[in-house]
Image 1 (cartoon, helix red, strand yellow):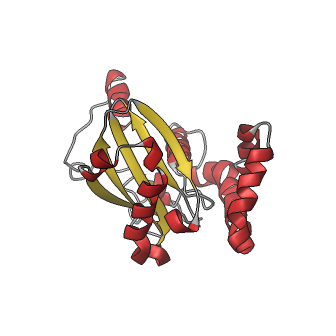
Image 2: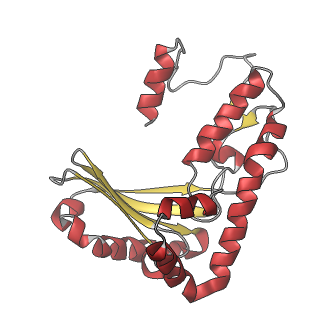
Length: 226
């Protein structure tokens, strides 16, 4: 995705300089360097496979306490991972092992064993100040834009970047655009997280039967992520 976006930008005439910062005296207007610290973590394996494609997601305390695990395969390249909060970091290896076991019918364990392990982290936070110490607008996870409920952040990254661009073009203050369009969604996802944790052991069966009984799961998700 990063390469595709870069290619689109270059076709529009944007010059992308890799591995270097701005020159002295050049103002930086956007800070998209990611989170400085983490409250959500991920551990997974990237592997090559003879399987053409597959898209799977799962929930459960034994595979990804409080968040989710996933298996994504496309064009012979696979990624399997577990996502969990920081307080469960000591269960990381256990979560990943159980995630691989859970998805075993959809993959070849020998191919996964030859893969390369990776780790990642993120942060969700509703910030009062969306500018760094140099006055640059904080976008994506640098601005804490991550879903409180299940930890999704790609949509927030794109939208916050769009609002930063609109602000640069004079369509409004960045702080105001974020407050009007994203802060309310993050507050809603924070309430979802509180409800999910309050349900405790009932949370997963409740979510399962809710989606299983729905004739339109996507519509249900739109309510959750309104």
